[in-house]
Length: 237
Length: 223
Image (cartoon, rainbow over all chains, first blue to last red; front, side, top):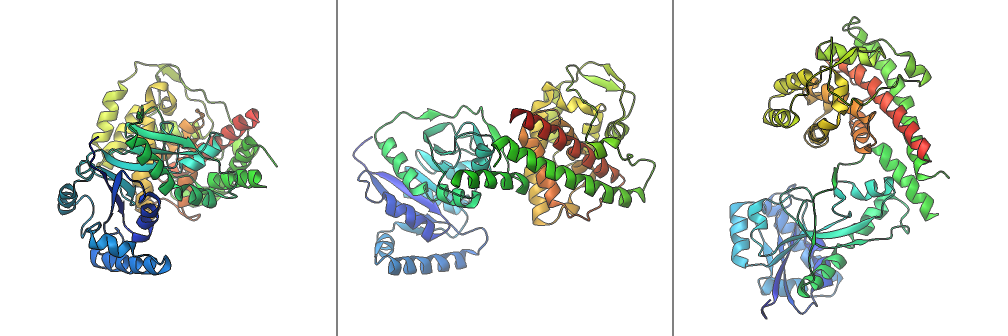
């Protein structure tokens, strides 16, 4: 890679979620971070922008920080008025010339959005790939007696089928007493895992291959989720 | 406190009791529609001793049309089976996918192929089962959660539930039985299908109960 810094965009609906990741990675010397906020599917574009401006203001007050203002002043806090897959959004993303996107939205990306990033979009999936694809994979791993962990990989249009895995790591969740607690714990590790992935990518660490041999899992029933809760409680005691 | 296996087996057993109770309620409601078609209460539901079903090694054919075979199998009666040439599964999957927005056609395709319902558990049907599981847990589930289970096209839904219930009692992949768990939890306790295929809800509950019993026994053996 040349001396040019790696241009990284945190893709999110909410400023608060993106800002947590920003704070974790902003000191990495080899990257140049922006935050790109797209409207939440449940809100209108106008109210999405209004809510995010308010959040940015409140987060600045709470953290005694002017990061949000600095980002805005440098053009590194970008508000999209349409969904990420909309032509105007992908056109804007192409102009911004990012190398990597960090996934913090709740949407599945289409090819034109993924292609707007030179290397692709990273996803911190709370399951170990290739074995555990899809939904409720933490619960399914526990139910089947397998290790729990996080895989950071470049997404494609499929469900956790992206071929390029940056790294996968087991995570100990025996400190968690319920499914909700364990999922919150894993989801909150996203910033840390993004940081690790960006460091590995800068060091030209070889990528692993997702060979697509795993099963796709679906959202787990209350019956089995209850069983997993009981298993977690047992380990927690 | 129990092991992982015991915790899962306990959960499945508790659901078994619930499904049997639900069957009795549903049976009374559906008998009013058509007592001729509705499967009788299998003794096995009371005693938890189901006739052993075998995963077929060869493609089976039988004397019934698809629907009668489901009723007979659910009633714990044997179906005489003859070996028959296996139809191509890749072509069938393509046809099924092409009919994604034609539920009547999907029902026709499924009923034709699974004239003998046990064929769904044959190794050759693995990709078709994955497809049915995905349809049930993505498209159907999403629509049922957005609106209600009553808005789904009943014959397609009930047929899928029956097939997946049969498959789940003949495999050790817990995703299949959990799809049934999930849809069962989505359906209100007083839900009664209204179409001419409504009785397939009764056969589904029997196959589901069977799968719960079989899975809990298998898991207990692992404990």
